Amino acid sequence: MKIGLLFPGQGSQFVGMGKDFYDSSDKAKEMFEIASDAIKTDFKKLMFEENDDINKTEYTQPAILLYSAVAYELFKDADFEYAFSLGHSLGEFSALYSAGGLGLADAIKLVHQRGKLMNAAFNDKVGSMMVVLGLDDEKLENICKESKLQVWPANYNSDGQLVLAGIREDLQKIEPILKQNGAKRVMLLNMSVASHCPLLESASKPLKELLVEYLKDEFKPVISNVSAKAYTTKEEALELLPVQLTKPVLYKQSIKNYENDADMFVELGGKVLMGINRKVTKKKTLPVTDMKSLEKAVNL
Image (cartoon, rainbow, N blue to C red; front, top):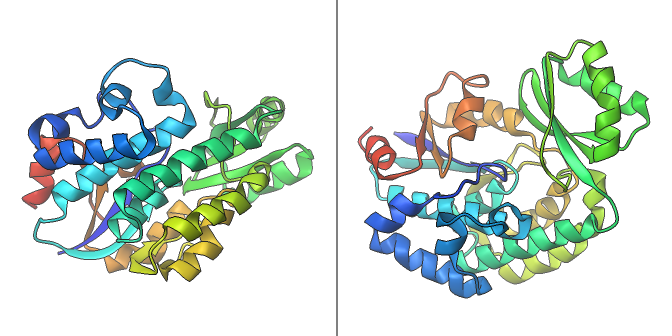
């Protein structure tokens, strides 16, 4: 059976994520130690106990990546054939780990620094993101352009579900316009950074310098958020990943482009993409979030 591996992005974090894996697996414990050493942070405390850091992007990103990486390592010995790895936003870095493009310690360091760079880009302004339901892509794109506000399409999740990014104040201004144009629901997210839009331009160059240091030369196929096409080399990644910060995530386009290459999907470290997939593809998606769901996925 050919499996498409899926990896969720920021926003999927919760206190207690990965604890069942940690309590049940020596491999998971070892990976937590590697991550903790990499950025001198206690990941058990970060992920298992109530704290403020879990929602700070420089810690959220490595925590989610670690959770996904552990889920992948525990799942990968199952009897399946690899088709590709596809991550949503931050999840593209988890996908690179699964494909052999990044070692665990380097992946943790990389996304920790990526989070810091994203924060620095918003040092003097407040960004955010907004979920919009019920408008088609072209209409929403035109509304953003015509508004003259600093608001852009950021995540193409499914037909009728698109996430906008921009200056928080401008997102608040565009909300009534969206509703007047037929949006069924508009929801401003509790975020201070606007991902996948031009406001992150200043982070692209330093991120590329980090990628030069950490990426391996070749790896299994990873689907790019930017192009919705597969890449397998460091050279290609260095073109795609820095601009991933400023370009929208083409998630639904990626699924539609590659769903015929997989018999089903497995989401490692989350359930968010499973929910989106119900609206995008008829192929089944199983989550791996704890030992029980792992056992179910392994025994397909």
